[in-house]
Amino acid sequence: MDIRTVRYSVPDLDEPSAIIGFPSSGLVSSIAANYYVSQLKMPVIAGLSGPDLPPYCFLSGGNAYPPIRMYGYKGKVRRGKKGKDVVVCLSEYAPKPEQCYEVVQSLGEYLRSLGTKEVICIEGVPRMSPEDSIIACGSGPGSTDMLRKSKVPVMDSGMIRGTSGVMMYEGPRYGFDVMSLIVPANQSIPDPGAAASIIGPISRIIPGLKVDPDMLFKEAEEIDKRLSIKFPQEPDSNKMIYG
Image (cartoon, rainbow, N blue to C red; front, side, top):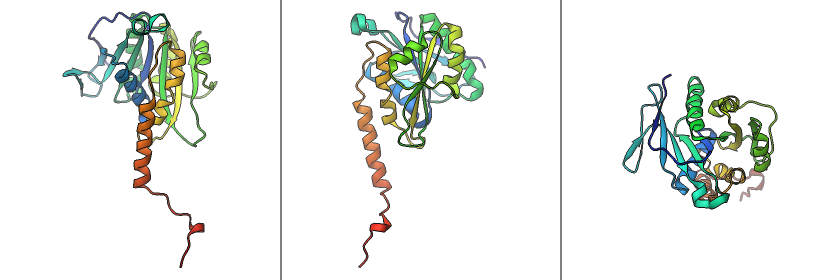
C-alpha cells in the first residue's frame, strides 16, 4: 500500500505528545479525539493519503483534507511552562487489518520527525457489564511512568487490536513510549459518556491539556433519554395489578 504524508504546515511543536483515535466500539476513540480538536481549536497540520485508503475527503473551513488527519496544539504557549505540545491523529474510518501496519509506519515516521516521545492510543471495546472500567497497558521504557500518572488499572496480559495494537509493538522502534487506554463502551450506538471518561486520565499524563468533559456527559444523557423514550422498560409482571 502506497501511503503519502501530506504536510499543510511546518508546526512549531516541541516534542509533542501524540493522541491517536481511530473508530472503535461506541466510536469512543473518534469522539474523544474530535472533542480535543474542537475544544482546543486545533488546526490541521498534516494528513495521510493513498490509493488504498477510502476515497473521500473531510471538509473543514472550505478546505478538503484526506481521511486520516493530524492536528497540532501549542500547549507551551497557551499554558506556559506547565503546558505540553500535542498532536492528535484521527479518522472517521478504521483501517482494515491489512492496512494497519503501513498506517502506523507512516504515523510513526511523521511523529518522529516532530520529536514525539509519548503516544497515547484510545481503543474502545464492547462493554460486557456495568462494572467494566477503563484499563491501560504500555510499551517502551517510559510507559511505566505514563501508566502511573494515569491512575488507571494496568492490564499485564491480553490482546489489543487494530492500529493501537500495531503501535504498541512498533512504537518503541521509533523511540516512542506507548500507552493504550482501553475503554468499555456501548458497541451499538455512539457512546460520548465513555469517551468523556478518558479525559481525566489523559490530562494527568499530558501537562496542561485541560478540556471540560461536561458537553460529552450532557450528550450521553440526551442519548439515554431518547433511548428510554424509544424503548420504554417492560413492566414488571410480578407487580402488575389486574382488575
